[in-house]
Structure formats: structure tokens, C-alpha cells
Figure 1: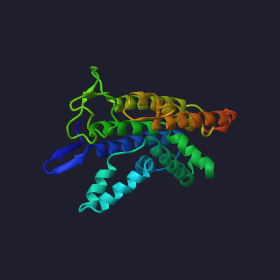
Figure 2 (figure 1 turned 60 degrees about the vertical axis):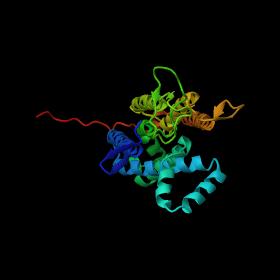
Figure 3 (figure 1 turned 45 degrees about the vertical axis):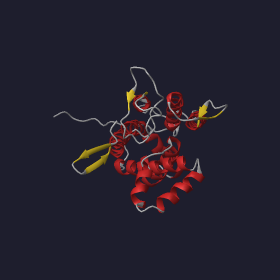
Length: 286
């Protein structure tokens, strides 16, 4: 794992590098979806706002799980002689997927209300933006997970002797419990699942769907993927007799909300939704 790329005296964090790449690729997918849906909006600007809000939301959710520890950490940082440097270092680790998901949804909804895709307004415009972003979201998530793995920030899986295991470098942000042990590269598994989910949602978006249906499908698929991968992660099991982690409970919530959305909107006829592909016009051949 390579938390930093060193070029002379310049140190570039690989997590930040992959976060940038995640924003770019997600922006490309969202732009392509805008194009096939006849939507005139700035995809890259929307994705940048979502990434920024998502990181802040993920960090906030993680830290609020233990307010007393957060308060102690803040006192230590601001009473040190290098508060800004230590604050930036603190921001680089300790994030929660569910907090990022909630923040991203809120910002996408708000951006939809502003952009008014396909001439919609109000809540319908916000939901339409969520549907349009459904294939792009897992692309950004998957690439971001690679950044988690390269920085060794604790998102890796449990220790293993299997051939699929990988070694972390000594400068990993969160070292393994036993020095030199191999761990399951669960971020790579998540990346593969995320790309599969993106492909499924892209294909589903080729047909007319009721507003909100694709958003519900995304919540179900991403929730199922995260719930399953957590069995191989090192997150502590805190709930239901210490069988499920905090992320698994959040993933179950995502699945239930997604199912509720798809069931609520399925009564709408196909014509009640919007086609992602604008009507074609005949072109003459020169």
C-alpha cells in the first residue's frame, strides 16, 4: 500500500488522488446520462459538490458515534503547536459510508431542485436528479474505495493466510493488529461490486421508469453489497448479539428504504415516468 506518492520534496496522498479520480469518472457517467436524457446541467460541478458534502457527511457520521472521543481529539488538536496540520491529518481517516450516502443524497436533491431537469420543479426535480445520478454514484464509490486501500486507512478486511491476502506497508494509516500479517483486500471487492451495480443501473435506466424507482434500486443494491462485504471487514460487531456492525445496520436501513420506494412508485404507469433517451429525429444522409 502507498499512502503517499513522493516526488522530490512533494508528498501526494493517494486517497486524495483517487478521490479526485472518483469525482472525474462519476462526472463523466453523470454527463453521459444527462446527454441521453436530454438534461442541460453541469455534471462535473454537481459531482464536485456531492463529493465535498459526502466526505464531510461521512466524517461527521463517524465522529458523532463517539462524541466524548471527538471532544477529546479536538482539544488535543487545537492545543497543539501545529493545529492545522494535525486537523488535516485527522480528516484523512475515520469516515462512515452511511453518513456520506445521506449527505450525497441531500446535495443531489438540492441540485435537482435548482437545475430543474426535464422541466420538472420542486421535489419531483430533486427525485429526478437522484435517478439520473444512480449509475454514477457507485462508480465514484468504487474508485474511492481503491484510495482507501492504497492509504491503508482501516477499510481492509480481516487477517488471512489465503493467497488473495495482501500485505500493508509499515506507513499505513491504520496498521494491522499483527505486524506483517496479510489482510483481505475488501476495498477491491467493493470496487468490483460497485462497478457491477453501476452497469445494472445504467441498463435499467434505458427504459421508462417511475420517478424514484432507480433511486430505490440503487439503495437496495448498494445496501446488499455493503451488508455482505462487512462480514469480511474488521469493523466491530455491535448489534443484534454482536453479530452485525454499525455499517450493516445502516445497510439494512438502506435496503428497507429502497424497497419501500420501489414499492410505492411501482403503481405508477410507465408513462408516468420519464424516458432517459430523448426522441430521435430523422437525419438525412449526405
